[in-house]
Amino acid sequence: MTEADSEVDRGRTASRSGDADRRDIRDGISGRIVSALWNRTEGRPRAVWRVLIACSVMFIGVYVLPGVLLAGAELPVSVTGGIVNLISALVVLAMAVVFAKHVDQRPLGEYGFDVGAAWLTEFTVGSVVALVGLSVAPLVNLAAGWATIAEVASGGVGANALPFALGFGVFTIQWALTAFWEEVMFRGIVLTNAVEGLRGRWISDRGAVIAGVVASSLIFTVFHLPGSISAFGFRMILGLLLGAAYVWTNSLALPIGLHFMTNFALNNIYGLSNVAEGGARAAMLLRPAFTGPSEFVQLYGIVNAGAVLCVVALTVGYVLIRNGDLSTRMSSTSFPEGSSD
Image (cartoon, rainbow, N blue to C red; front, side, top):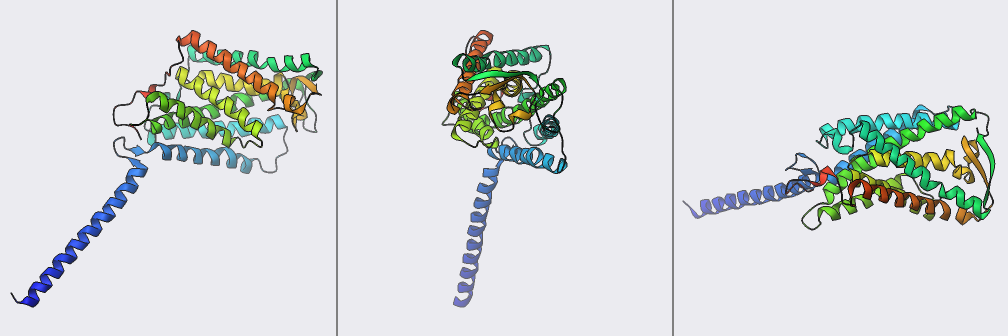
């Protein structure tokens, strides 16, 4: 072999080595990208992407689709709200079914669905707890002279206002649908996946549950577009309560009951939203006229926030009676080793 041939062979060998190195680099980069997106052990997207996929679908189905379908419609505020939340509930329910099977790869029941007599009883407990706890707000306002009862069984005002009984009934359905789809979304799907994604070598199951409740509550709050610090804090407290109720019971029944009656009592039973713009259009069992300081009597003010804290205290008391402690009952914290995202 001539010296020239040797040089050619060395060049070819170096070229092949360089090609192999470049392939290794490409494989390494692509492998890291795939690993960041896909959990090979579980055969599904990683938790953060599962949450983002669910939130993206929810945003389109809840915030975009109803607006397109109802564009130009002039309906009573209760009917509009009912239709919007019916569409939202159908979208989220359909998404949950498809998402559980094809993306999350878990039984639908792991989102807190186990509807039966016990489930309905716990839903009722949540509703009663919220109704009793929030009654503190009108009692404080009346005792302090910050409000008077202007009307009882008021159907509201406006060209499309419904009679009280009909409007009150439609609002009942609206808030039930709202509580259903928001709890399925933010607690059933988001919180469950957040806990799985946060669990790992450096954080305990308990720490993952706490962080998951906080993360899901923050997402819940942001999606409600709070326009002030007080609104943000109010929504955050409510989100933490609902998230805690979910992990304490491993069921959506208690949080749906709490959520339903919180909305219903604030807006239509005790009329605490009458202080807000647009409140006059809603059907209210009690319609207060507020005269107290804004920072106390506004919808997200000190009095209503205090009433929500009373709901928190009553919920904690119920869970202690129910469970004997405040430890998590989430089935999704019992993962096999190495299954964290």
